[in-house]
Image (cartoon, rainbow, N blue to C red; front, top):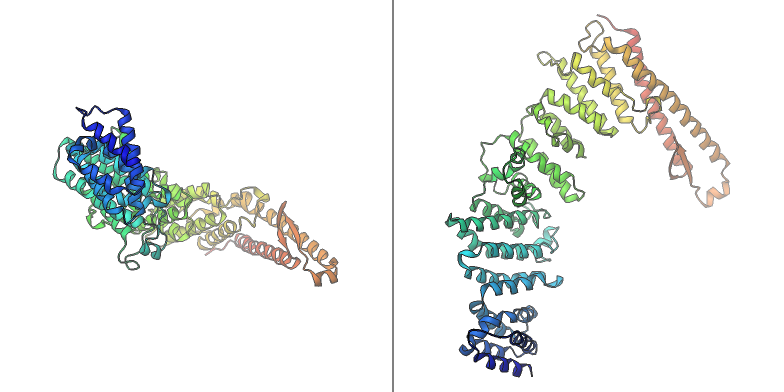
Length: 574
């Protein structure tokens, strides 16, 4: 029935001049042709399509058969496969390339989630053939095709392990490799000529490269070449950076794009669209962490300039919550820092917010220390001030205070003195260090790291800087320090110890009242409230351990504070 309908409409249309076919003709051809293909009559459809008398009809209507042809080819039915392939090949040669392009891209967009990779790989060669038929007017069509293809490829899961990439369990590797083959002739064409048409093509290839850097490459965790010698995803990243060079994009210019934007380059909005920040961050990561195309990056650029360029990208990575992005940010920051000489980053860089925000996002003390080491003396001073003001994390603050002590110690060495960690500049910093946020009511346990390092710094200064020399001015400032820090701390320690000792006694008393029989059959669990905060349910033994540990901490603080008071009282002289 369907074959008869198809034959009838074709026979009727043979007599029509100037391709004046009706809407009904198109509809019958499409429906009957689809049904024939679905019913396994692909050989008959091929015969009709190849008939020279039907050339004009096929040229105008043939693209409507793309949908059923693609679906049959995806099923890989042996009986129909050769005929359907031959039919598709013929349609690609005779039908309008614009109509074919629309039809093929529809098939890509409508691909079933389970057959995205198979659809993309099947249609890449037909799409390439159609685009090449468009001649010099292909730029926008190439861009539309590349965007559609990448949208679908981005839906594929990214392999997380070496084995997943080797086995290509999600077919992402095959798609990426096939995309490179697909795009190569357009890259070659853009390389060979500098006409306005090729400039349009270069723009579309730039968008493709930027989009590839974002998806899938921003999500990919590339494996070390020693771990995975043949990595399709690493090869894809390498080729994408190669395409950028081929179309005339300078890697240093791309890297410094965030700095150039601050100079209000004309065409800001267009630049922002062509050079997405996430894509440039991915580029920086591939260059300086994975060392892809690093041999093409000029060595004339200073390591400080490279770090300055990368800071915005590092900040972008670290502002995300995904573990993979955070790790990329840390890796890029560390790799950028190790290139820089110690004590060389000038204070002027502190004007860039990222030089404050990035270290605050870092969880690892190793990288935090590395960044501190790279600042010059004045920059260290400003950095310490900012971190003490904005960190709100006792552990980080304690670490910063330890670094301040190290800088003061360094300043005491012969010929190493500096104005920032001695004398007048030191005391604004010390006032930030020797500070109890809530006065005597400060939670000393929560602020233990900060309090202990502050006390150690104060003790160090009083021992290292004798009263008769007073190089740092600590002895001149001491009476103020006693009033605004030591006395409130002493009061806070007394209050905290009294509170915890009372809790300890209550816990012991409650433990004794526990029924011995019940404690043998079922371990008692109870809660403990300290400082208006309810602690997790614990056994009495665990509660006693916590309370003893807290009291031990207060004893340590009190011991250092007592030593400081002793030094002040003695006031050692030469």
